[in-house]
Amino acid sequence: MQPALPTTPLPAPPARSYKGTGPRRFFDPNTVETLTGQVATVQRGPVRQGGKGNMVRFTLTTAQGPVQVFLGPAKFVDAQPLKLAAGDQVEVKASKITGPKGRTTYTAAEVMRGGQVMKLRDDQGRALWPRGQVKKRCRPTVPQ
Image 1: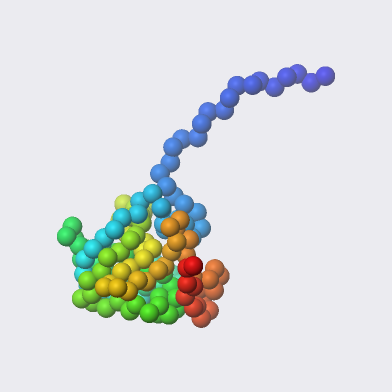
Image 2: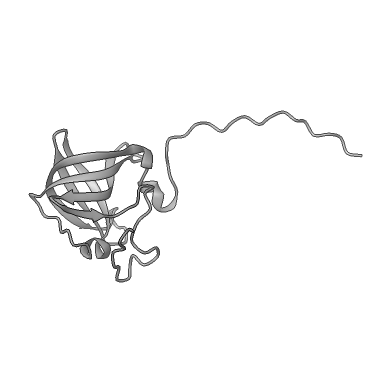
């Protein structure tokens, strides 16, 4: 007969700030804010210098100052009926993300200009573009 193992409970893991995994590392449903302001610039290219992918992001000038807002893959954003340009007054529903170096950016779930809406993510932060097809020709999905 084997001796009984001790039944001391294991300590709880330490509390961590939201890190997310996979595509959700850039969107935390608990930090969603609504920002309003004017589009200063729209940029395309990789998220990081030397990185891959053609992503769209823009600088939004708010009452608190300029902020970076990430939209998504260029092919998906370009297929949307709403086209953003410098000078547009917009309202953005986005998740506030603080990076490892303390830099704050936002990941957009939707962008509204006038009566038009560009829907990019659902309420849980899941991207609406086809998974694994970012490099291929993307067509927007219409939420039902």
